[in-house]
Amino acid sequence: MSTDSQPQTILTGDRPTGALHLGHYVGSLQQRVALQHHHRQFVLIADLQGLTDNGSDPAKIARNIPQVMADYLAVGLDPEKTTFCLQSALPALAELTMLYMNIVTVSRVERNPTVKNEIAQKGFSRSLPVGFMVYPISQAADITAFNATLVPVGGDQLPMIEQTNEIVHKMNSLLGKPLLHSCQALTGSTDRLPGIDGQAKMSKSLGNTLLLSASDEEICRAVHAMYTDPGHLRVSDPGKVEGNVVFSWLDAFHPDKSLVAEMKAHYQRGGLGDRLCKKELEACLIALLTPVRERRATLIAEPDYLMQTLKAGTQRAREVTQRTVDTLKRELGLPIMG
Ligand code: TRP
Image (cartoon, rainbow, N blue to C red; front, side, top):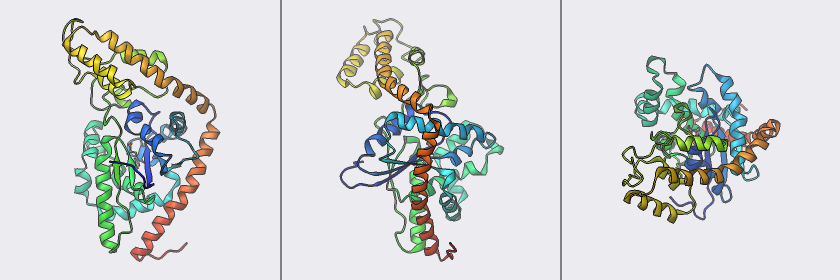
């Protein structure tokens, strides 16, 4: 979709389950950096959502909050333009979740494709936490509490946006007025970056990703291990670019699109070896990540600054979100006792 003229309210966020990686970068971070100049942007560190599948390890979630803040600032999100906030410090989000839980059926949540996939992938079976099951409802609370109309997210989050809009429509028809705003997803330039091993999903738990903080050596190791075309045995053989991770990544990161197009044609004809393609990718990843890594190193040495920035934003977000929940309660006829 276009993000032209009209300034919109943006809400997006991440679970602080680990430092952010290149999948986050192409999926959403890059967009946020561009959008912050023309829109009112809130970025939420979703620590409560992080706990939905890390309930027994809250220390891990807490530890990663400054890590994610450092990633945000290192890629160019600017606290003067973007408001950063912490989910667990915004009680209005929990209240809205409780209200919405009553207008969403269990079968609807069970049908959410993202939740379904994650449940299968994590092998929860009978040990599925209730909180995990309902996290799409909590995400709808996040989005609507800010009255967000635009949500920059990775492609895997589209079912969350759909579910949010269903809640918006249900609530509005219950109230008989369009109190809540529906929202649109904005997916990144590369809808989904494949993992180093060629798997569709890139994730830290699969070990097939590259962190924004990666050293040159880690970059080279990752590129070296990258899945290409197993049928491309000799340099002179014609090779496949579809499903070849090196080319997916060159598409995502190389600034010279015509060079990449030429390389693809050459590879398909035969005569271009994996080693040269990987060299080209290595160089462009190093150019992209070196300044990010350097800024990040400075930032992570100042945890107080990072947490102070988060705190200042959270205070602003508290007002915005509390106003939404108060209005909703009033419209529902619940007494406001504040
Ligand atoms: N579910 C998102 C993720 O895993 C994180 C998230 C929480 C989020 N609340 C949000 C994203 C609200 C967009 C809007 O990446």
